[in-house]
Amino acid sequence: MLTLSQVSKNQQVLAFLTLSEENLKTSGYTKHDIFHVQLVADRARSISRAIGLSPEEQEMAAISGFCHDMANCLSRRYHHLLGALLFHQIFQSEISSGRVSPYEIGIISQAIAVHDRAELELSHPVSAVLIIADKSDVRRERVYPKDLDLIKRDIHDRVNYATRSSRLRIDTKKKKITLILKIDINFVPIMEYFEIFTERMIYCRKAADFLGYKFGIVINNFKLL
Ligand SMILES: [Fe+2]
Ligand SMILES: [Fe+2]
Image (cartoon, rainbow, N blue to C red; front, side, top):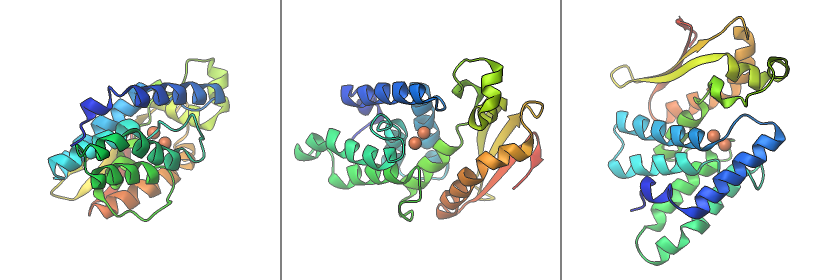
């Protein structure tokens, strides 16, 4: 079985993550650094643990979290699909040597492939967990330090910058996953938040639905969903 500890030391994975971070930084995107993928990996592990996935599935969710954005240096538009193929290619030797099952690599690759756009209908809980872990990472630190006027010019920057904190609450009794946000409404109005968040939230709701959960969102103590 492949472990996150093994994957996070893989030099090819680390090289692609570094190149992707540099590529997106040059293009002016939200920060996609090592902290983002570590946070998504941690979040994917804790969501899957909380909802009762097996230890093997928890590990696969964490690995997909760590590797999900590594192909951004090849293409932003197709990074999810290329990332899936890249993952398979990097760990092909583990399959050939019999250390890892092709099924396990397949599940992780599939999760990476569907994390960004609805390319496929969800068919495995690991994919659903990765979507929630990734789409819920909104925070001020994801904006590169720059002049406030420049931040105000870009809606993604504004929304991330306005977020004081974001966390997930998982209620296994009520079967509800809630994203709890604290935002600075002096910096960005809640309506603008929705402009950016609608697509992400639809995807999170679809993922939660697949897991048999409802998805909710609370902003500044107001329950919006
Ligand atoms: Fe991504
Ligand atoms: Fe991501």
